Length: 110
Length: 112
Image 1: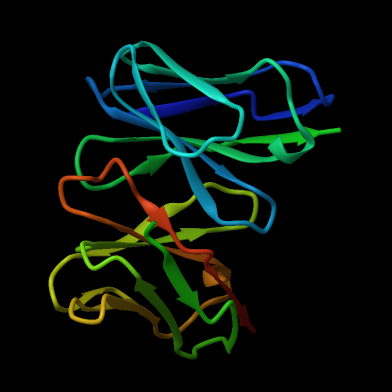
Image 2: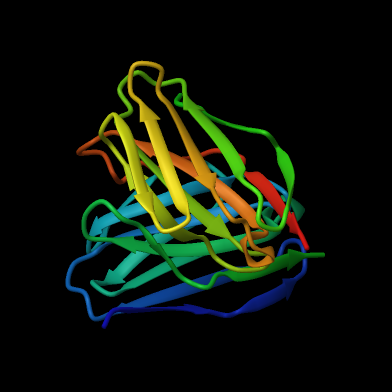
């Protein structure tokens, strides 16, 4: 069975500090991978998607970057956090129509 | 840019009652809709999807789609307190599932 693991579960970081969030998908070969962001009380927004290793497309500019170093791994990062980066970050995968979400990372920037 | 509008923003129904949620896309190219449910602090879980005109039923949940008006609705009958959650509608274009656009959601509260 396929599993999606996100890390960390939660983070409290200072403004201006770097950030790295990750997710790993097991049990599926060459899935489409996505990063979504949901501000508190806000809409779920797609940030990035990737259909293959090494290839990432940006959907929304939020001073974040993403990379796919392995087929089953997707990384979200920034060198300098802003207060506006706070929220719920979700990694997701699909191999067709349906999108499956990980459990998410709750990020608080102080 | 495609927009997905959901209404109402929030809804309170009594236990055992019917909840009706609405969703409309502004992009005429959209032809696939999803309904997700997100409990507080959790990730969204897909409830149902629809791409054909008409109705689809799964247990207590029924989804309608009118492709001409790009309007979909979700109906929950015999609502339970465990149905209390944020309901998200999402839309995409066949062949472009990489770009899934979500609405702001309807927050449903089912009161015992």
